[in-house]
Image (cartoon, rainbow, N blue to C red; front, side, top):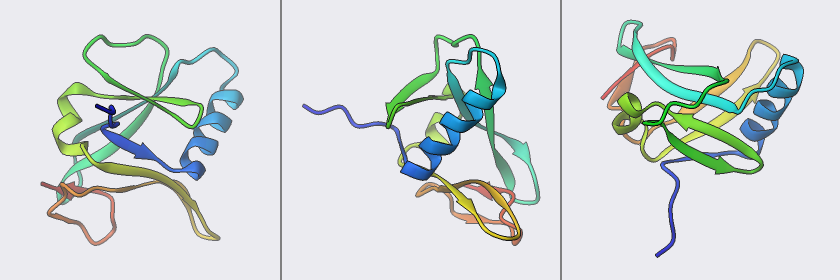
Length: 112
């Protein structure tokens, strides 16, 4: 049986992660994706550098990058797609999350 990652990572997101890790100037294992209570809808995505792995994290290795998914956020993030978008107004990671029942008008937070 094939193992399916808990999240998918687009080429643009993988390229951005590689660039961030290269620009950081110190060894990092990858990035950690999680959620925290914030915003008008309840939860916001977090992306942080990983210098020390946490045993309970789910590790997704894809397209040459490693994304650690916070165990406490795993149920909110299963099936999500991590992308990176850039336009003349903003640049950042974006998420398509099938678990989200709605999000605030500014896109800053979501609820499940």
